[in-house]
Length: 249
Image (tube, rainbow, N blue to C red; front, top):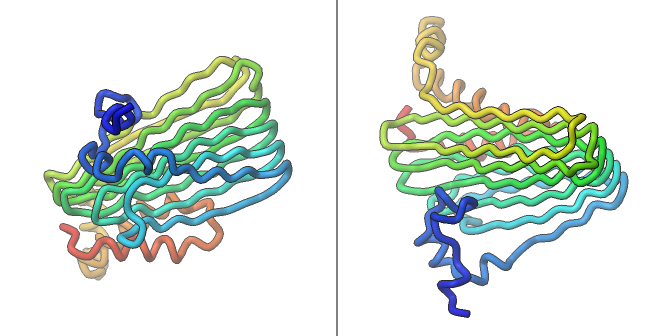
């Protein structure tokens, strides 16, 4: 099989918005480099990822969460070259998956988070919050798929994506997807993309807050939603805000 035959194209749904030339440059080997953590029943594990210029490229994680276990993954994606975090999760009975991610940056760069959460057993829960902040010609993407097996009753799954466009020319894309075969479930998804609230910025400025500082505070509040479930989110928040240097605020 040739190298080209193993690489995706934009015709593939999971790669619809990806920077395919950048993926091709990474090579087929990057597609096979999966990190495969397995959580034992009842285990709790939290992982933070800062995907800045020290860790660009393709990051693929395949997590198995045992019965009653809890997996938490929080990420800031801010590299100045193509970066994709792809997460596949399989949940056991009563397990929980918590995911919070921020894509942020300018330039002519695609940054994306892609998730597939499989509720394979009853009474599992999942909660995903993704925020995208982009300017210049940059693009922030979220592709999220929730799958609920036929016998996975009492599933409770939610995903929420919001994109903030700071400058004309930037963009954000979202493709939330539900595939549900059980009938006693609660599943929800939402997506919204817009610009900064000018009224809020004006209100803060009218109360004596420097206009630039007011806009930074609004961005901080926006991205903080993605990290709200994390007890000690300051380091990741600061890392995300550090990427605002040069933004059109």
